[in-house]
Image (cartoon, rainbow, N blue to C red; front, side, top):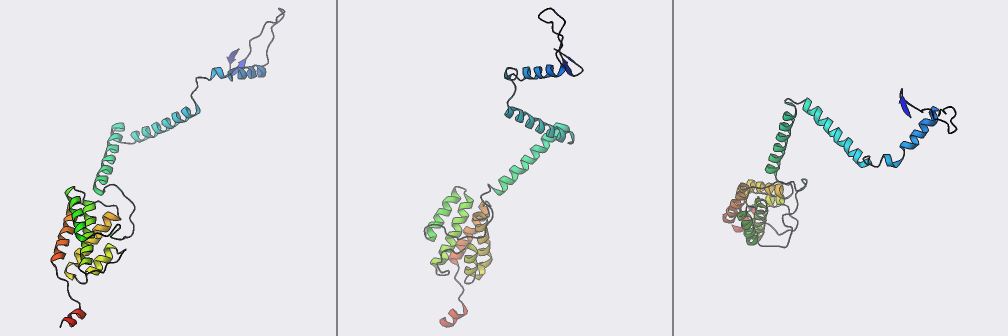
Length: 229
């Protein structure tokens, strides 16, 4: 068979009896060729459906990069520089903000495990600080502050109290430290529920506040002053 004008035509065949050639009709020749080419032996080395899909995907990605490089000053080199700059910015944000822990939620309770004394929380906080685990150190120092206030009867022991509630309540008998107490509560909430990472400065602020509170005498309320008089 031969191909002419886009159609497959059949060569004349010599009759077995030596008579005149026999012409195969065009439609019959096309059908015979289709059956012949449908033989699996002709397609055993064809790429699989998955491979063809992967090839199309890579072709599509390549066309995107080609289009991007064509519209970027400097072509491919300019595109590579832009990608590297973006990756550097992402790395800087990751380093500054720390590993995302979870989405910001409302403030939760200060204590989430067995009751411990203020001294125990301070010891744990110092151990974290010595290992430069500032986030854990801030959490433990805030717990030490709240527990110390409870031990001094400046706060009533209450399960489920939040850091903000503790700061607001402690600010009444300790008005000189009310602002620092609120700031300490915000630091605790940021690292515990906001996914932020603490640093040494944050821990030192809570440590100094804890020590100052230990040396501060609470302000007596008007009722207590009346009784004292």
